[in-house]
Length: 223
Image (tube, rainbow, N blue to C red; front, side, top):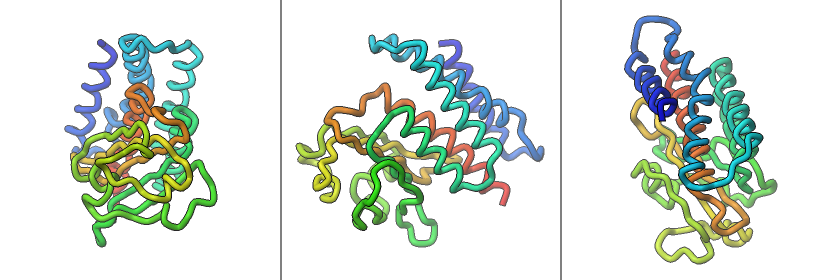
């Protein structure tokens, strides 16, 4: 719990100090370097609370890949490279069939796909954008809430894309990406297995989304 609170405190300090005159914020640097280790400990306690068996190897790989992603966020200035690393980290740790990174286009107000990883040769309909509030991605963007659908073939209330059903994708999860207190996009995941996404593996996506949102705000603030 102490490590979790420390991680939260450093996150808060980074945002409070973001507009300082210093060219490089040491708290921000510390956050990007230490955050995965702190959160790795949080994941350990979370899995214990949920009575989910996690080996030391599982915990090591989780921390290592998040640390690698954090280093990319710290050293890379090309957002597309960071997006690719973001999707790759999620593929390695969560192992979904498909990862889609959406970001809001400030000119068109459309939620566009800026990177996809996983399944190849997707239909054109799988790459279309969404208006703010449209479909599940638009709803997640508007409401800033994570969504988990255990089985999209049985979903009756939320509008699921027909192309996903046609490809026999079964479960879905979407996590909002925040930067400077604003929702800038979402990370959407599909799996071929029903009930695949749980609080425990979606937590990893939320951590990666926090790191990406922080980096996105930092890079755009330098322009």
